[in-house]
Image 1 (cartoon, rainbow, N blue to C red):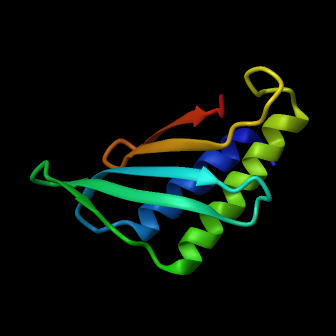
Image 2 (cartoon, rainbow, N blue to C red):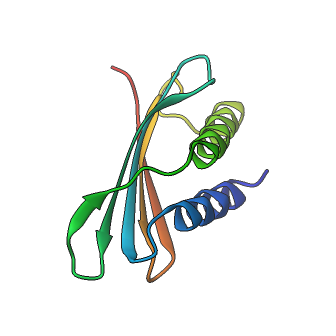
Length: 109
């Protein structure tokens, strides 16, 4: 899968799983090394600019895990990781109003 397609699917998943009044969604993920899950935190800003958290359904979390594991594999297979290690987590920031996504990858020290 093309890297851009991963970003599009992640963005769409967060829009679908997030609150209807979200203007910005922030998903923090730490993937398990085995690739079978992870720990997550989901926050959003609403129309009034207030920061809140939300809890997407289990299917959305499972689908996000699958996409992130596939994206990490894509990075490894194409030599896109910083240094020799694959990233272990990320912070996804989605500007819902402008449909812009940013992913900051986290590496274990």
